Length: 480
Ligand SMILES: NC(=O)C1=CN([C@@H]2O[C@H](COP(=O)(O)OP(=O)(O)OC[C@H]3O[C@@H](n4cnc5c(N)ncnc54)[C@H](OP(=O)(O)O)[C@@H]3O)[C@@H](O)[C@H]2O)[C@@H](O)CC1
Ligand SMILES: [K+]
Image (tube, rainbow, N blue to C red; front, side, top):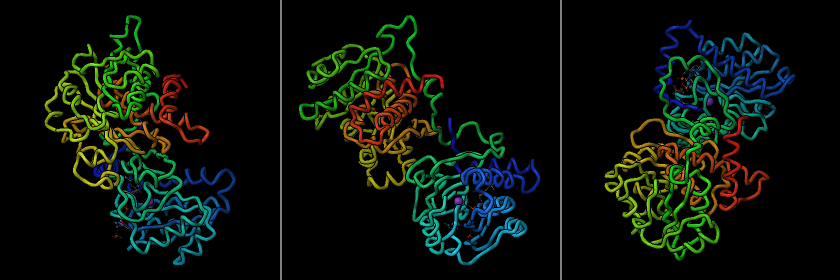
C-alpha cells in the first residue's frame, strides 16, 4: 500500500523526529536521498561534468536543493543555483559555495545548457501557483530539454488537495521525503509530478498509522479479491442483480453484465428491457423481465447504467436490504435522505459531471478539487463514493483514508467503460467485499484491464476492457 499524509501531519511527525535527532539531520537525509536519485537519473558515469541548475525558493525546499547540489558538485557536476525567493537557505548556500557551486542572477543562460534542473522553489510550505517572477524561469526550465526533478513536490501545486491554482512547474520525476503527499497522487497535481520516488528519512516511525490517502498495489488487491472455497456454490459466491439498460440504451446493460460476470460473483441476474441483447452476448446471465423486487434473491444490486429517463427502479432497489451500487442515470436527482436512511452499504459511482450535479456545483470545480468533492459527497449521502476520473478516488462515509486508484489510463475515457466498472464493482460487492474494497479493487482491475487492452498504444473499447479483466485479475493474483 502506498500511503500519503497531509502537510499538518507531516509537520507534526517532522517535529517529533527532529526532537530526537541532531540539528539539520533530517535535511541531510533528504538531500542525500535527493542527490542519489539525481545521480541515477543522470545515469552511470554522467554525473561528472553534468550541468545542474538549482531553482531555489525561500524555504527549506530550497535548502534541500542546495545541499543536494553541493553533493553533486563534490562528484564533479557543474552546479549553478538560481535564488528565486525573498531569502535563501544560508546553510545550504554556504555548503554549495564550499563545494565549488556558483550562484547566478541570469537563470536563462544557465538553463540553456542544463542537463538537470532541481526544482526547489516551494515544497510543503508553498501557497498558490508560482509567483510571477518564477514563471518565466519555470517555463525556461521546462523548455530547456533538461530533466526536471521536483524536490518533494512540483512547485505551484497544493500538497494537500492536488489543486493547481496557477502556474506550476511540470517535473519528469519527483523525489519526495518521508511519505507521499496527497497532491502527488491526485489529479490535476499528479500530472505535474512525473515518476515518483520516496526517500526514507525515518518519518515512518512517527507518522500516524492511518494515512489521509492510500493507493492499493497488486498484493493488496490480490489479498482482497474473493477466492471460492471448496464448499462454494453460485449462491455462496454471491448473486448480483443488475438493473440497467433501456430500449434506447441496451448496450449499457450488456456492458454492465460483462463487467459483472468477470467480478467474482457466482451468478448475475439481469433485470430490465434489454434481456434479449444481454442473453445474446452473455448466455450465462439469469434474465428477469419483471420488477427488481420480484427477481429473486441477490446479495447485491447495481442500478443505473443506461436506464435513461426512468428513475423508477432506483427507489425500489434502494429499498432492498443488501449492498447497492448506483451509477449513471441512477444518480440523477438521487435523494441524500433516501440513501442515508439505508442500513446496508451504498456505493455511488459518479464521474465529475454527475458529481457536480449531485453537489450543485460546476463540473470544473469538481475536476479542480477532486478530493474535497469526493469527501463532501460521501458525507452528504452517508455512502461510499467512487469518483471516476484519471485518478479515481473512493471515499467511505465515515471519513478515513481516501483510496486513490493508481492504475488509471486516459484510454478509459471511452463510452461504456463506466458501465463495465459498475458491473465489476457490483460483483465484488455481491461476493462480500465492503463498498470501499469493492470500489477500489474494481477501479484497480478496470484500469489494469484498460492498460492491457491498449498495451500497443491503440484505442480501446469498453468491450475490450471487459475482455481484458480476466488477464488483469491473473496479473494481480499471480505471484511475481
Ligand atoms: N517535513 C519534513 O519532514 C522535511 C522537510 N524538508 C523540506 O522542507 C520543505 C518545507 O520547507 P518550508 O516549510 O520551509 O517550506 P517551503 O515549501 O520550502 O517554502 C515556503 C516558503 O516559500 C515561499 N512561498 C510560499 N508560496 C510560494 C509560492 N507560491 N511561490 C514562491 N514562493 C512561495 C514563502 O516564503 P516567502 O517568499 O513568502 O518569504 C514560504 O515561507 C519540504 O517540502 C521539504 O523539501 C526536508 O528538508 C526534511 C524533512
Ligand atoms: K519543489
